[in-house]
Image (cartoon, rainbow, N blue to C red):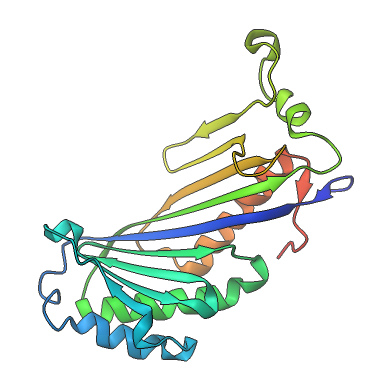
Length: 218
């Protein structure tokens, strides 16, 4: 890792999504038992009644959605009829244990209340990354055929596997920066701790291609 600059990531998001084997028709009633059970479970993170909202304009069961905002952790928890999605804004690996505890608590409560069985899990990390000593154009140009592509302000790459992908592209928000998106699909029994370790290794690999490393290696 010698010679690599520390990554400067001004903006990022982390999205986890679990889909269930069957829709949660039995609990999607008024009042919804998910609201009271999840509210009680998340009180540890100081949420209030004002942090709960729902999609008032839903016209189909597919559109039904309840959202819990957890300001203390910069996390949104969205519940649909057949899935649960957790979105963290600007997460940091130093916060990983706290995020894992929150996610485990929320998912345990959801599954206990609904008796739902997870069919699949997906995780995606998107981040805008500022360059170190070397420009991203110079670094990424070594990964593509510039003779074939011709001159450009920036080059991008994408790699797709059966259960994962990563994309390096030009950031549209930050000057001379790159946007990196990592995606993984894992089995239904994979724990949050295992998912975090897999994603961490994926991030280290992507940053390495950009000549960068993390301040916190884990």
